[in-house]
Length: 133
Image (cartoon, rainbow, N blue to C red; front, top):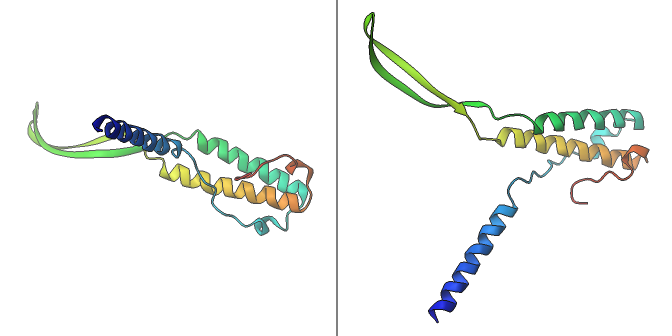
């Protein structure tokens, strides 16, 4: 009976671990209404689509920013005697929330452009998929 309980517990823990990993790294597009691009013609929509895709590429490749990781206050002795000093710890941040928010907005804009292009039957939108398709 104990081996069955332990095996069940391990299997459940494994499934929870796998389901947690599967959801990381996915960015859901922010909703942007297609009516935003209603006044654009097919040529303008195509240019806007290219422009937004460039921003997406640049944003995906953005590196993490520097962040302060601590402040130190102390006293040091040197050639000129004893003096106070302050030091700042700076390191690379792994926080990607700002980049992910920007990508979410860009993905939403791109989807709205494609939806508006489909409404106007623009040829560049043929075969272009949006989120959820």
